[in-house]
Image 1 (cartoon, rainbow, N blue to C red):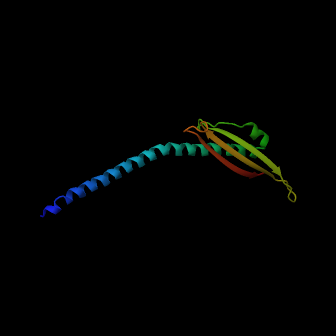
Image 2 (cartoon, helix red, strand yellow):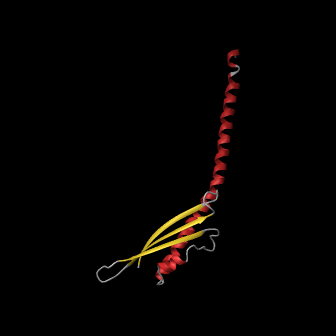
Image 3 (cartoon, rainbow, N blue to C red):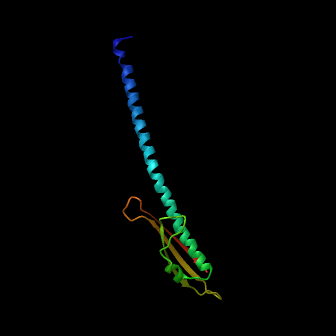
Length: 133
């Protein structure tokens, strides 16, 4: 073996160690990011469900003969099982005249939020729905 080739293995080993160290640090950073974003995704899903619960409650009020006055008066509200979220409801209606019927079209908006705006834990979701009665 010649003297010129005797140090090449050491350079290759150092290169492989550096590459493996960089991959290891990247994997640690990636797993840390996933660990911190999972609670935010869960809170976002809870916010969506809170807004959806508000829309479903509003639809039930309309189906049982209620109207926008009753829905708007109940806002803001909370739902059990979705603690910490407040849901604001906005309802508007418009009557139409078609042939021999007079349908009422309801426009419903539910806005759920958790925490205060600007804080690290703030989550909000807005959903809209249109109903014809």
